[in-house]
Length: 173
Image (cartoon, rainbow, N blue to C red; front, top):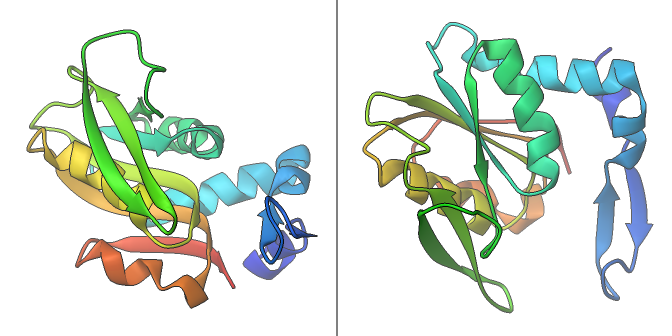
């Protein structure tokens, strides 16, 4: 299955979650075992020979892809969560959104300095969320091998916020 074929599984939902936004709905892709498997294969592909030890993924849709990519890479899985969801001692990073702020958290013992981490999410929009996750991982002195998303919204220029880290997206709008 090609990337162009995977793109047919992405549904546009106009005016969601608010008027003027054209939401890219991945649930049809998740419903297809073949499309989901191929998506995760393609997300893992650039990192196969990079000695990845952990895949960090961002709540909640990033978890779906990140856990499978971790399995495909023979790596551990690290959940990066919204505030108040992790039960253990944690680190927090606040970041700026287009209309306010948000935060992500990670357990204090989730990453080791020797880890080689790939960070996965479903969509790269403005870059704030995945950059915040990268900030948290860097706080452990771990190496970030790369970042990857299923979808990249080019017109929002999120890639510009990522710096010189290796970034891979499958479907670009």
